[in-house]
Amino acid sequence: MVKRVVGMYFSPTGTTEKIVQELVEILAIKFGCEKAYVDFTLPGIRETAQSFGKEDLVVFGTPVYAGRVPNVLLKYIHTVQGGGALAVPVVLFGNRNYDDALAELQALLAENGFLPVAAGAFVGEHSFSEILGAGRPDNADMEVADKFADDIHMKLISEDIPETARLLEVGGEYPSKGYYQPRDRKGNPVDIRKVKPKTSDNCTDCKLCVEVCPMGSISFDDVREFTGICIKCGSCIKKCPEGAKYYDAESYLYHQHELEEEYTRRAEPSLFL
Image (cartoon, rainbow, N blue to C red; front, side, top):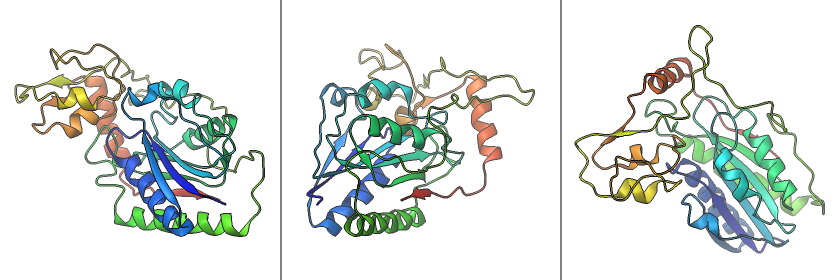
């Protein structure tokens, strides 16, 4: 029987956090048990090992980057020990597609001793844009999440859960064939891996961007400088109170506008039980 529901998530712009917390809140009420959260968005948290047991139900969430679980998280995820805990892998994609991310996250958790019992791919506002998936997850998404939590609860109280990991049939493939590769209209690859945000004169040097960077890559002494990699998560841009962070690289802007023009339809969550 579930005695604790735990939400674990990486959520630079808060969209994954919103869905994971909604699921945890509903599930904890349904099971009448305690709840806990492990937000591993910031690098310091990822220095602490996490382990679980058979009385835990863990809702584990990450965003989708290039159709996959963010590769900068793989080393950390491999350190999380399931110990027979039940798991609900959840991914958030920016209205394009979740590709192989959900299959990958489920497999990684199973390899670490978790027992997947449900899985979901939800939609959040894209990290590159305020247009693509704008405002999502919205009220309709939260209603879907609430119903999903109800369905998970009903499954767990009415079905025998296997003692060993059994992968659910979810969308995507694992092992994946590769990362999503943006291309221009001539079919040439668009590479934005080395692109980093710029800082305008609106900056007041409040250091918030330093505090929220999930890679710890923005210099405290000079917030215009990077001391490490940028994963284009959007945290410094969307959380800056002065709107001082921005991109001006042609390759990045081309890819952003292409996505905004091509994926105007409302993508819906995909749920698996």
